[in-house]
Length: 179
Image (cartoon, rainbow, N blue to C red; front, side, top):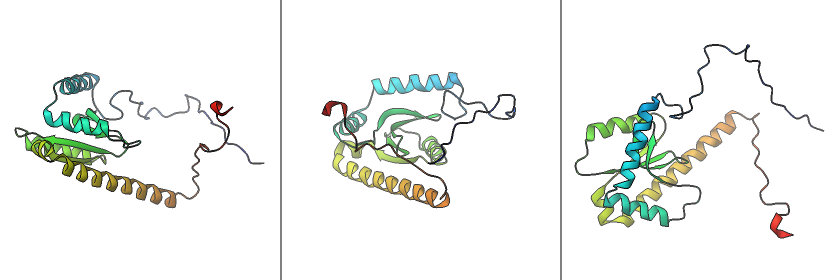
């Protein structure tokens, strides 16, 4: 018989006062609620008034069956709004319009890459003219990110051999509808 571990809750008087409070909005980023609300409003406005390149790429993402990898249009990531974001992969796709400010874009890319979010930039004209090539390059980048995540998970398991991971058994047992 094996011993089961139980969750031990600490007394609130024992915790240190220097423990940072859990942030509910902004998901860990140091962003004020007012700024975050403004970013979400701006993202909503961008979704309503999308460019033809955004609409074309969004249509391809909607038609594609990518399993658990989903791209969200005009997503707020930290203090930036990215054109498409795949949270599971840590991948942001930015569409470069002709009138975009490149210095601001490079600074935003650096801040996203500092938190392990890879930024892929695609010119809008290329999306409109050669969508198949863009999707092929995007697939290659997605496969690279999947391989990187698997390698990091493997390295983590090797570095922490005493940590056990378990998944629920999804294949065995009767289902409700099988009666």
